[in-house]
Image 1 (cartoon, rainbow, N blue to C red):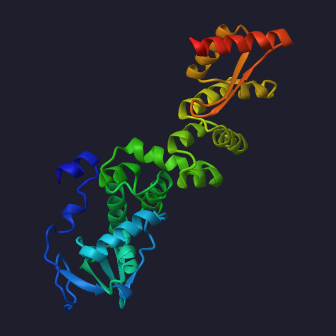
Image 2: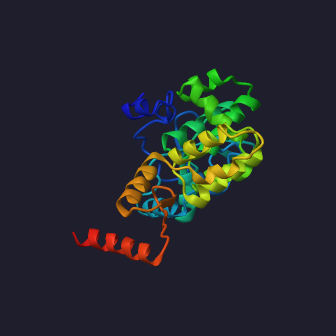
Image 3: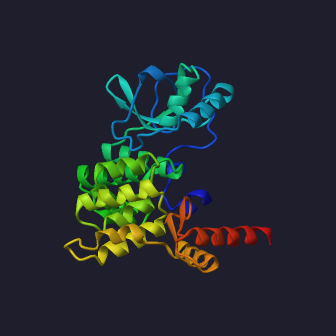
Length: 299
C-alpha cells in the first residue's frame, strides 16, 4: 500500500487493482481482460447501479473536463462485462468529464468482478478521493450489509476503518429524510446531525433541525440545545427555555456587555451571526447607554 493510502486507512486501495504508469494504446484494440489497458467506446459503458456517489460538483467536473481535453485521460477506468456493454466500476468522474470533453473513447481495464467486489471498489475509490458525503457513505455501507449480508466488522476490514465508525455512519440513516437531504446538500454537517439521534421522537428531531438552520447554530450550540432538551420535563412546561440557551462564548460576551453598559443585554444566534438586544427603561437610560457606547469607541 502506498503512503497516501496508508494515511487514509482504506484497506488495499485502488493501487493494488489498477496498474500505475501504464502506456495507453492510442487506437482501439481487441478487447482484453485482466490488467491490460484498452481504448473503449464511451457509448458502450453503462453506469454502475450501485455507484455510492450521487452528487457531482459541476465546477470541478468542468475543470477536469478541460484538463482531459488538453492531456487526455491519464488514469484508466475500471469496468466489467455486462452482455454487449461494459458496466463502470470505478472512474465515473473521469467518464463524465471525458464525455463533456467530447472524447469518443477512454482507456479502461476490464475485470471480472462480482457485485460485492464492484460495490466495494466503488466505495474505496470515492473514499480515497473524499468524494462521498456522509449520507452516501452510510447508504453504501448499508448496501454491503443488507445486499451481501456482511457484518459491520467485515465491512470495516474491507474498507479499512474501525467497526464503530461503520456502525455510527449507518446510524445516521435513522434520521428523517428532510435532515438527511440537508446533510447531503451541505446545509448542515454530519457533526450537526449526529447529536440529533439522541432524540427518539422524529418531530423533535425536525424541530431541532429547524433551529440549526434558522439560527446557523454551531455543533457546540446543538449540543448545548440538546442538553437543555434532555432536562425538560416530559410535559413540556419548560419548552420555551430552548430559545434561551447560549453557548459558553456568547454567554460570556453577553455578561461583559451587560456589565459594561449597566443594563440587560441579550444575544440571539450563534458565534457566526445573530443580533444583540440592549434594554433601556427611560429616555435618560437610553442617553446614558449611548454615552457609554460613544465614550468607549472614542477611547
